[in-house]
Length: 372
Image (cartoon, rainbow, N blue to C red):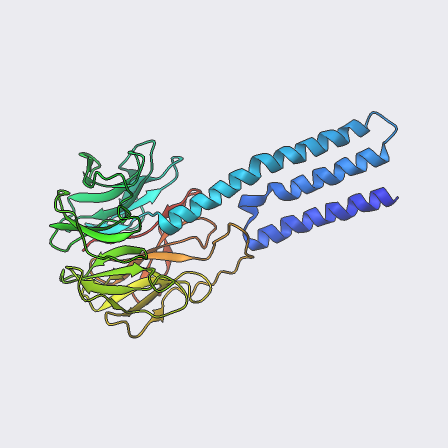
């Protein structure tokens, strides 16, 4: 009777586990965990209840099955969540709204590839097709080219391709990692962070890859450059204050000025088309939200207000909104959110209203970046 009671208790715990995971939104990832628990309980029950019969060997089978679930799915889910955080965090989809199109990165093919779709989410088409990852698309101002990050050379390099995916060309050709390309408004320059100096610094180069010049020189990392619409300023997110803050500097690297001053991290700056606002992501509310502020740093306002309402786990980052990108007319902001359990592309009005999902795929689709 005690054995049966034990078994029923563990079965109940397993059912509660399913219920908890469903509420937490984690059932997609950890569905196997309650099953493994039930198999362990079944093994104990069979071993004790039928200790003097051949049936008890089924208990060992149950334990082996639970162990296999653990060693197969636990590392897999760890890699999946790490991959999700990578794509959604430091690696990206870039959404560029140009001529009614949005470029973005999707992992639906098993690795990160660059896709393009219409502004309403229709017509999703893959542009790159490589065993290595392709990240961070950024449209040229005239819409004819897309700069992106490619890892096919064993490290991250800045490439450029035609808007249809043809003519993929390496611009940086450096052993270190080069990330996050950002076109100047006239299309003549590309700013990017490079780790060639041992840490991430903001560089600028001509559109053909020549004239690579360092703009920042700081022991901390400097990330996420974004040109102002008039080309005179570059916003970026250095970690020199112990956390990421939004700074702005002149296009030649001078006059570096901090705009945000918060204990949390502020990242991914994006200028509004008229240059009056800067959208960015901040985790000052406990999870990443899209904020907007005036170009001088005043008036910082939360636009998405999407709380992380899921139980925290070791890998879970659900409820985060990142990578704001303005539509060319300034009326919309595209962004990436994992509020549905994986990263998807969303769009909202510039005041934060009308938040609408554009992609709907089991794999990660992430990181908007709109062209002018």
